[in-house]
Length: 241
Image 1: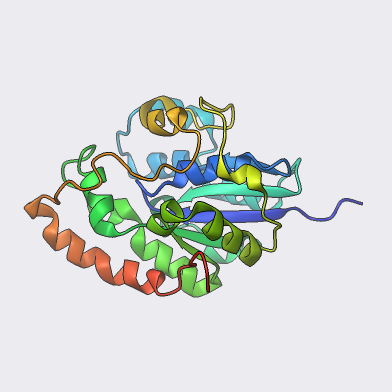
Image 2: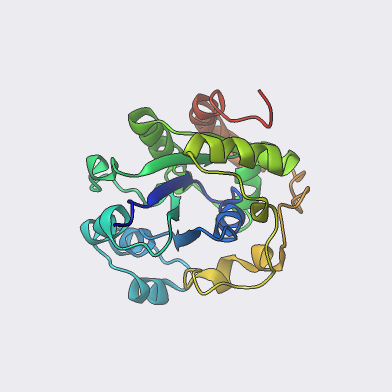
């Protein structure tokens, strides 16, 4: 009888290297991935008009109980399943207790850099768009390893080794690079959002535009974000120590 798979729920905000980290795990021979399974539910509930909205709605279940059942107890063909979750998709109606069977982990990034990047695709982002309150909520309820995107870019192998150890997995050097191009496992929204990661073959040392200044209009939002980020950053994994 096959043992139960390890189901990793990686909770991230937008513009956080989340797709690159999904690529890293998918390059393991023992791992399959699930890309943003609550996205259609989120769009259906909020009515937001994201790029490719109708395709997203048609590609996934739009009710959260079906999604949660699939990610917590649905069939998995590999020993490890990596689930890429956007924390802002976790709307209040979703039963947090139903997520208890997952192995939770958290990907964070300095909110100033997030806002600089996100403001290029949405003029007036809000705290709800970034999902930081939900990320802290899940961390405080379930715990789990925290990875900062800056640390991951600075020392990919060291941080991935520590992340794997925290998740009870052996580190696989295959996680450090991957073939360029799209994946069948990518969500249908990939053509709108994944151009950068499709061109990548590993964790880039520098993100274009990462030194751009934050628009003054977003300074109040940055102050809202910082306490949530700092709550999580206090627990982030380092390459050593």
